[in-house]
Image (tube, rainbow, N blue to C red; front, side):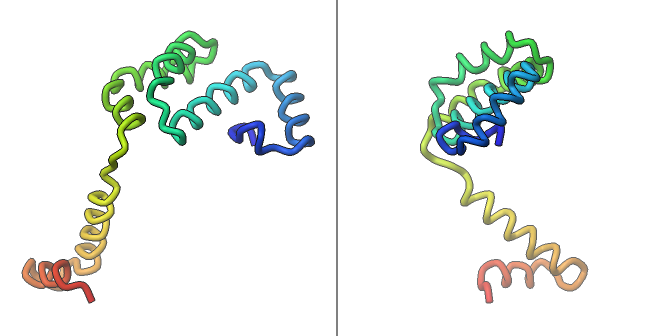
Length: 122
């Protein structure tokens, strides 16, 4: 509930979330930063990354400061992932399929049989 956008919550959930935020300002801050990050990733808003990193680096929560410091080290890759349209999902899927086949055949056959299974799926 803390990570959902406000427009997706009912009145009772909004009231509960507001009450929790009043009782624990740290939890409210964590919820806000987390929602911003989730929204940035889901909507692929790479232009919002510098502002979010600055906000996370300067907040009072140690966990977010460490997270932001780690993400800043990989800033170029992260910015590209959030702004580029292409993905390597297909490649990763084929690698996963190949590893699955290899594990299935462990100790049962040689590389020639594995090659046949990969090239001619049944």
